[in-house]
Length: 290
Image (cartoon, rainbow, N blue to C red; front, side):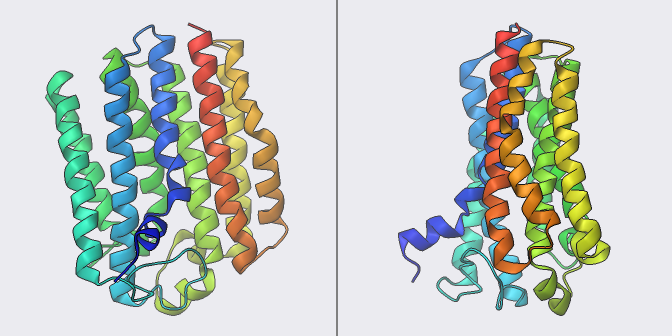
C-alpha cells in the first residue's frame, strides 16, 4: 500500500510548472487585452493541473504494466516500484481526468461549447500518450503532443475563455511555453535513452540519438527567449521573461556537456523552474503593458 508521500511523489510535483505556466501566460495575454477574468483563470488552472497530474498517473500505470519502469532512473513510479496496484493508479488517473473535465465543462458552458472539442482531445491525448495498444509516446510523437496541448491549447484556451478573442502576443506566448515544455520532455527522454531502447519505447530522443537530442533541447530553449524578445514589440515589459535566462543557461550547459543518467535529473527541475519564471515574467510584463 503506497503511503501519502509516495502518492504525492507519483504525481510528480516537479512537472506541475508545465501546467501552471501556460495558464499564467494565457491569462497575461487576456490582461494585455484588458479582459482578465479571475474565476475563469482559476478554473483553467484547475483543468491544467488535473490533466497534468492525471497524465502522470496514466503514464505510471501504462509504463508500469509494460515493464518500462522496472529499471528506471528518476522519480518513483508507483506501479514500477510495486508500491501500488495498476488498478489503483489507473483509477486515480481517471478521477483526475473526470474532475478536470467537469471544470472544463463549466468553462465551455460560460464561454462557448466548441471548447469541448480541444478539451476532449486533451484528455484523449493524455491517456493515449502511453496508454492503449499503440501509444503515440512510444512512436516519437510525445514532443508534438506536449507542444500542442501544453503550449497552443493551454495558452490560447486560457486567453480565449477570458477575452473571447486572441492576440498575437498569446500566440507568441503559446509557442514559447510549448517550446520549453517540449525541452522538458526532451531532457526526460534523453535521460531514459538506455532503458527506453531496451524496452522498445521509441521516444524522439531514442530516434534522434543523444547528440541531436542535446542540440534540440538547446534550440527549443533558445526559441522561447527569441520569442520573448519579439513580444517586446507589443510591450517592452515582455522582456521580464528574460529573468529566466540564467536558469535556462545552467540547464543548457548541463545538457550539452554530455551529462547522462542521474546527472540529467537536475535539468528536469531546472527546466521546470525556467518555464515557471519565464511565464511569471511574461505574464507580469503583459499585464503591465496593458
